[in-house]
Length: 283
Length: 259
Image (cartoon, rainbow over all chains, first blue to last red; front, top):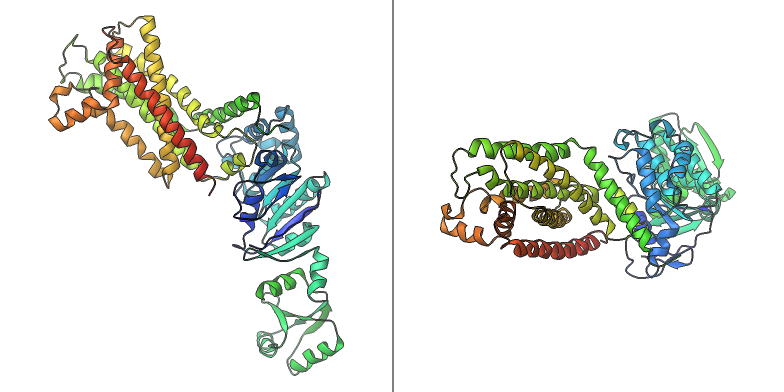
């Protein structure tokens, strides 16, 4: 594996990749659940292999599937993890976190009756009770409805505001763009690019040309003509983004290629992170 | 920050994990059935259905004769449900959370053992009360009762550790549940319910040497206050199973959760 990461304290770091790219494996190695075959990793100055216990004291893991105990209530879950994190006042911290994550009304219900969004909120509250320096969120919004996802983003931003380092994995480009200070793109076990969302975008292409179509026929016909270009298609919007270096020469070449096709609109814009991701991954 | 958690926190971890398992017991109707109904049904079944048909030597009181066997069946079966709990837990994210925390390694399995002992204390008391209602007349002294309690406690711990091994090895919770059958039927191949000389030779040889027979004989003679001949054997068998299976369970847990 080719993974070399350097994460700033107190930032939101995002590991972006498709299913099976190796995101969870990296999280498991860094959170001491899995031993790496080779290489070194250290968190807060502690080596994950040699000082596993110190690392465990500094981190908190929220797995891909909400790591909560379904038979216990929200309050019991929080108190249990608080006591296992060896905090002195687990009960008062529990009350504060229930309040903070809007779970006070459901506090004494078994977690098995919770909705997906409530489970994730409880999961994150449980991760915070031990006052970790680094919190791992492995795909925290996978399977959530849009409203819960936006609520989760707010929670993650607030969390980073308190000085915790957030290590986030996601398969959603938008999520990475919304939240992360620093993004690493993981593909087949290798980091293929990293930087801020802005840096990643400028790294690849300075501009993209968005072509919009009113009909299916010209939309498909245009795709036939774009062989020499790097582009991504958006079926739902019937539009195509063509990646260019921003030069007039390339724009003229593009226009020559699609001459005669009925185009509803043409727009020049900065490449989206999605364009960057898809181009990187398809290489 | 210490490399090793202090003794105080280690104990804390064990208690928290045991508290979790005990809470699980109260949230689950199956557990209530096993703890309260099973012992009562077993006593009733044997004392009233089979009691009339089976003739035994000694004082002729069949209730006195079967109490040790039923105690062992109930404890064994109740302990065996740990296999299902362990297996179910392993398939859920909560175990990953525990493992990424700086908690005592042994607390996970010890939690189940403490909860199982707790549950068995309740069901054993229920069983003995039911036995008294049906005509149980033990003659044991206080000291003998204490030895009986010790043997039963060790048996519960031994069977729970054994059961965690099955829980760790099984691929599904249903598979882990199969261990319950072993614990439910093994006592029948012993002197628990019928005198051994009524069995066919092959079965008799097995029954004479299996630990349940030694435990049954030890409990029976302690309850009747007749001899202490099998006492040491019973305690040694239980201790042996505890030591071996606790070691294997610990190793399996480590192996199973690190791959």
